[in-house]
Amino acid sequence: MQCRKELNGSRDALKQKTEKINLVKQEIDRSKTMLDRKEEKKREKAYHASLAPGFSDTAEGFDETDHKTEIIDEEELQMIRQLKDLKKEYRENFNAIKDLKSAINFAQNAIDSAKQKMVVDFEQWYLNTFEDPLPLAVSKSTASVSPLKAKQSVSERLLILLAHAFGDQSYSRPRHGRRPSER
Image 1 (cartoon, rainbow, N blue to C red):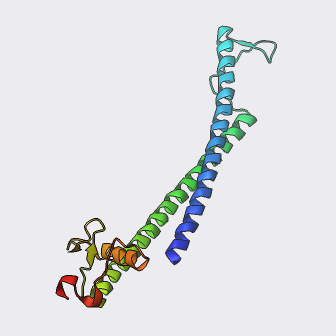
Image 2 (image 1 turned 180 degrees about the horizontal axis):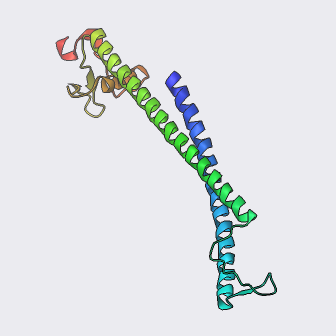
Image 3 (image 1 turned 45 degrees about the vertical axis):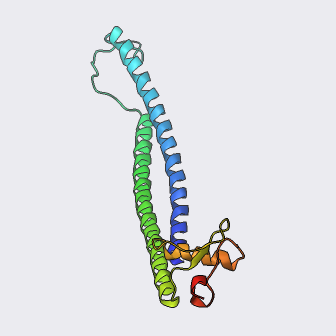
């Protein structure tokens, strides 16, 4: 029961983290698009400047210095920092999702293992409790009695017994532990 609660809690947390990481990814894409537009404008400006070398639109005439270094303005610097922060947040959330998936797999494996143990324990109890592990089945169409196949599992045998207990007439249980042919 505790594993089931942990599993459900981990799944809820995974869903929240997945939604969060999707929002962060959308924000990264928006920031990257804005930064690309800004760089495109800078390239256009540099291209126009290369057509008229030495002419500066800010100095109203020719500029004597040749600027080959790229200058980043305050807005672009802020965008780059924001993009770095978003990428860091994305990596953290991605690692958290990996950890949650691992926890979910562990909890699911624990639940599956517990279920398997319960089935094995039940089958052992059933075999120890009932002397006749092969109940008889009655076919509706022929009304003949035949033993169940030995390869049937205890679970299948239990289903036959439960069907009989709940009124399904297609199955019959031997009376007093003996087959009708032995009476």
